Length: 371
Image 1 (cartoon, rainbow, N blue to C red):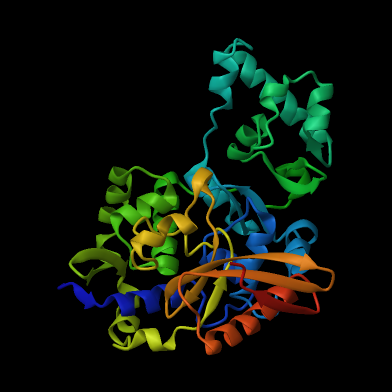
Image 2: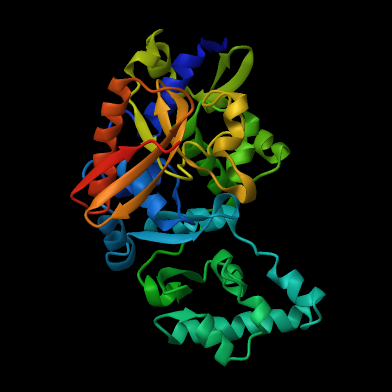
């Protein structure tokens, strides 16, 4: 089949639509599944990413579904980063991104013991987790676990999460807490799909939520080598549609052909003004960022140590960055535009800021423009 040609504007519109930014998603479960997880190393950012896609969703709603209803689960996934997934997706995520962290290597290199010693230590911690409703660094210190293995980034807990044994609980102060799967979700059907089938499902979901996308985009989002991404796409050729945008070949699902063919040539005119939070899933989904931002502005959003700023989106392009601060019952949103904003745009930003305030259960919001 001949490649379908799209303009940058049409590509932009379709990606925004697929990631839930044009038509509201039904609920938080649908959002977590459509996006294949909400990146959550900054917990409130995950709530904001959901709130811009699911009407009337609050931070409290996310916490209720995560910690009380347990219909969501917080674990490490793609790119080794912390995400909130639909609970039912945990076996799928584990089948694709299981394994271990670098803590075993550190244990051995620092002379703390052998590989067998590390395995015995993990087994000891897991046994304790099976008997405890909640486990953190405090309990491991009491076991005599070296402080070097108790990093705030997960430490040896990370290996047990990657093994599908533990998941995150709410933090207690500055301490991360974890629970064993058998304690937290005793009724979860832990039937792991075959690894090849699991990777296939992940690629299909990625293209459904973020496509059309290139091989390099898929590798970037999953954390795979480009060769692995190429292999997975080749295995799916019968279900894929080639899309050409300014000479670059991207891949979409054949099931999306009709929707792609009916995109308006003036697609940008239908894109709303948006306030996307830090680490928004769509912002992280592609290696090539040219479709979203001018090259000269790149470092204002993607900063040192992997930090990704919250962004103002106007006509499908990044038009500035923003941060928020809670002022009693008011949310103060500081905006740093890349260029002068019109009065109309500023009025729309005030409206968008109200959605953020509602997410946090605050009465009102206002925008300021620091120099």
